[in-house]
Length: 155
Image 1 (cartoon, rainbow, N blue to C red):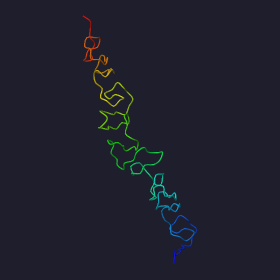
Image 2 (image 1 turned 60 degrees about the horizontal axis):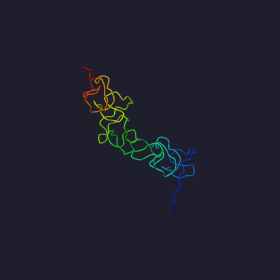
Image 3 (image 1 turned 135 degrees about the horizontal axis):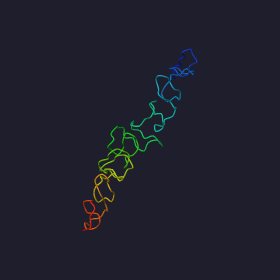
Image 4 (image 1 turned 135 degrees about the vertical axis):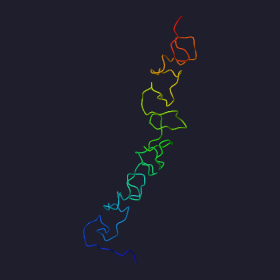
């Protein structure tokens, strides 16, 4: 009738037999060294210790409160949730092809990828110093800056 008590004859509470003569189990709040990575004794699966007594980590498919903004359980960096477990956004260094043309992860606006995650081009209003002489962001070809982003020299 009921649970058969066990007794291993020692006072170690972190082995397979608790001091109250019950069998150790995941979720009892006592860490079994070498068996469990953690044991917080609760049934909350979104904190730092999973209900399986494995430490929570980015990519495990469980969204950790206050730590991750996404966790889709994969290591793909080109979907809405990259391997950083922070929602994909412009400037994170991962190309999200449905919404970004480029993403170099820096804040330099004068390189090939603008801070808006669009490819730099003549007419975007930002001078790409290595390839453009000017960029006035208009389609007027007779002003100081031509539509090919070269300076118009007065005649």
